[in-house]
Length: 556
Image (tube, rainbow, N blue to C red; front, top):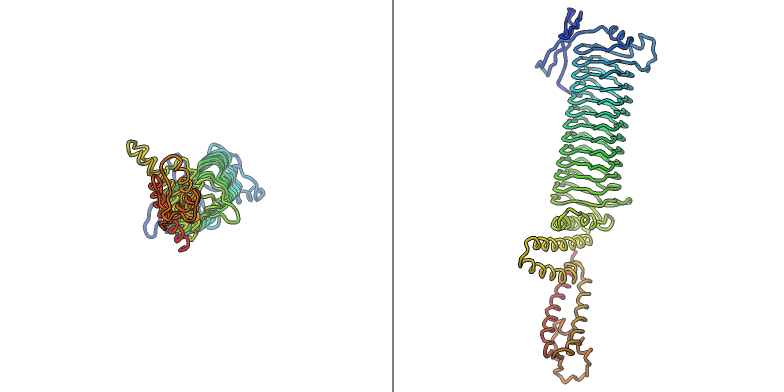
């Protein structure tokens, strides 16, 4: 047993006793439930001689053990009394052991039992002390342990098979050192561990197998050091761990297989232990950890295959490894991040199509590679996200890249942020309509040409330099073409001693105007004047733009 303060006192009374259902007993037991020095309850239970139970098994009669007390009940003793093999399967027909009390200093043994009939019923029963052994049991119908209490050293259901009926462990109180369902086959029925309290119990479901039914651990509480679901096959039903409290134990779902059912961990609470979901095949369903809380312990989905993994409005307190093997969407929107979120592809690629980080509060670090993770596509592929939401996400990535010293990726994220911000403004103006739309088209067009195309928002000095050269050549060509249509000329103020032709004058005048040198040896005449003024402004702007972009690069 764990360190629970609950205890039971049993007193045997050598007097006749009757139950409301008409059964009579020559002895009865008074069972008192205590917590420290306070008695919580007291109830009377009939005592059935073991041989009478054995005779019912021999005859394959329905067995009514409800509201009874059993000391050292054991099918091993039954086999020994009948000279049967130690592991021979014993048919137990329509057993009803509800509201009963099983006590043993060593072992309460139902191992290798084959439960037949309509139901095997242990609801509201208590198993006290020793080991509770249901290993290698089989059940062809419903198995009911709802509201049962396991106040024992351990309880084991290893290698058991439950074929077609529902398996109900809901609202159980499990106060053991170890609870074991290793290699248990839960069959096609629904399986419920909802609202169970596992006290300080280590739970082991390794290699368990679920088939078509739904599986529920809804609102259960785990307080043990280890909660082990490694290599479990969860079948095709819905898997519900909603509002489960996992305590500070280590939770391990590594190498599990889920089929097509919906997997729900919504509003679950994970403490400071490890949370491992590594090499898990989550099937084609959606896995929701929305509104969940994760403590400081390591959380890992490394090398897993997942369709949609959502952590909307969750709190992630520890290092989170999201380097999945393959997936469509990881959604961390509106979550609080306190440590590391690692999505960065390493030796093996992270094959992910969409990453949603809308509205997150990042107090830690986000590790992701712009190139290897194809980060632009992760955000830009979000069909349902507005331009404003995409801009917000690229801005968050920009801040993250800067914090990590990845300045090249920071620049790329910044450009994506500004482009989506511009599109968002235009989209809003379209909704409003009116004269504001015309102004918005002009404003966004100006930003597109001057800030974006000319210099990638001051992130590329080479782009600005290229824009300068293109502008200088474009104005030179205009100086050559304009005189053919209107009065326009470039006049020498020194009698043109060098005898420059039209092409040479045009390029020379364009250069001294663009760089605002102003030697005075040539001056514009006619319509060339206003064109020269525009070029002078362009030159001042682009030279300043180049200075900003260049200094920004070298200072980092």
